Image (cartoon, rainbow, N blue to C red; front, side, top):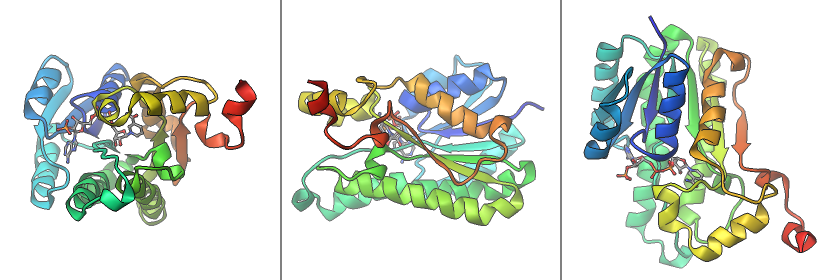
Length: 249
Ligand code: NDP
């Protein structure tokens, strides 16, 4: 029976590109998203993919989803916790509702999905890949909620690697640099886009596919001895710090 990946936030963006790469690799994919209309439009034409509408921040819905996926897909070899939301704003203006909304999807969702799918992943000695962000590796302005969730996801990955390794489950984290998706278009102003170009050695945004390549590698047998690692797919951003824009000009 072909392998199965669960990809959350799969209706668009990085999750959709990851779905397509898994399908090219011959895997089947459980595409999970809360946007039912977009999920239907993207899952239906894809052979080997099945759409599951679910809000990953809802514990009951996630428990029900785990049962449904096991029944319909038969096995789970990889879980990609990719669903995420971004809200940018000054620290003093981040009200508690906003804080909780970002935590609920970006952090609670990763915890809930991973816990619910651990029994299935034990059976296959499967892999978890959590999607962090360069905003979780380096602090910046406007990202008090978003950056804090992503830093927590990086640590949660290490907790998972430490605790689930004895079951043969690997857990790793991919930290993307900027990619033009619905999420980033909403929060990246022209000034932010220009600043990113300056700060990234490769001098450009990444593509959804470039992030998917890192994710699928970490889910594959090629990464069978890699666990607890944080891989920045970021055009070199994380490696730099001192005076890059000034040196360029
Ligand atoms: P997109 O907005 O393009 O896609 C995310 C999808 O996840 C959307 O369909 C969204 O639905 C869905 N989603 C959001 N919350 C939930 C939820 N609670 N339950 C189920 N589905 C949900 O985002 P990207 O592809 O850009 O982002 C994917 C991941 O990559 C995120 O974790 C993000 O933080 C991370 N990332 C992205 C970067 C970028 O520059 N794009 C940079 C660094 C990290 P809806 O539209 O309704 O919100």
